[in-house]
Length: 287
View 1 (cartoon, rainbow, N blue to C red):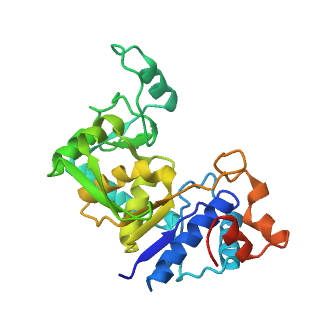
View 2: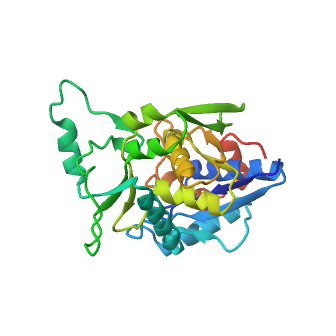
View 3: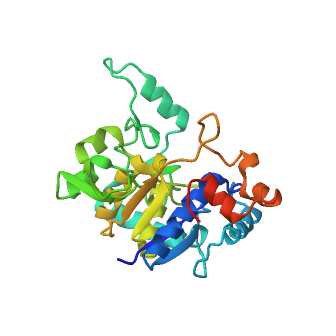
């Protein structure tokens, strides 16, 4: 079948070999199926996003030989869509305002709780539920964060488990999501922060649906977050795409590449005279 894939970088630093691998893989999968490769700019964190890094993304990907339809979707232009989704979830009764800081959460998680150790999920420490009974107050300034009430959300989903299709292993697999595990090992994740108006989890679900993405290609470090996205898709009556979680590109010491690792930035390789074909070989892709 024809597929629509996407590459969705944040303009907060230089693209490196890991980004190149993800973008090339998403592009190649779409082209091989006679489909469409999309570029999306995830710039919801305006405190870190920079126009010069966005321009560098276009330059780096064009150098690699990738092409995409215009105009490019930018998340900073879509705050209204995220607000509408939040309003829908609030009407369902599955969200609540949260005023806890990260330090508050760490202190609550480290407090003695009958011998139970802190639980870590896709977003780090699973939220202990301190603000779970808080209500939205009309006329009161927005809380620092809005969380998903996972227990209420699960009650609205008419099945004990969900699933999605995964192809990252090289074969097609149906991955089951146990909602009881989501309750304890994911918990009440943040859907929006006051300084952004949204979160990665909410925006990526809304944007993939808006762009009719059929295959999400991304690193295996995000595989655990997929259960959150499938739950949100079910709540908001959005389609669940196929997922392809790929291996991560690491340095010689086995450490995952980061944007601060300028030595492996694509721009640096280009300046050193390497070709796009060299980049493909370096990440293990054929020409």
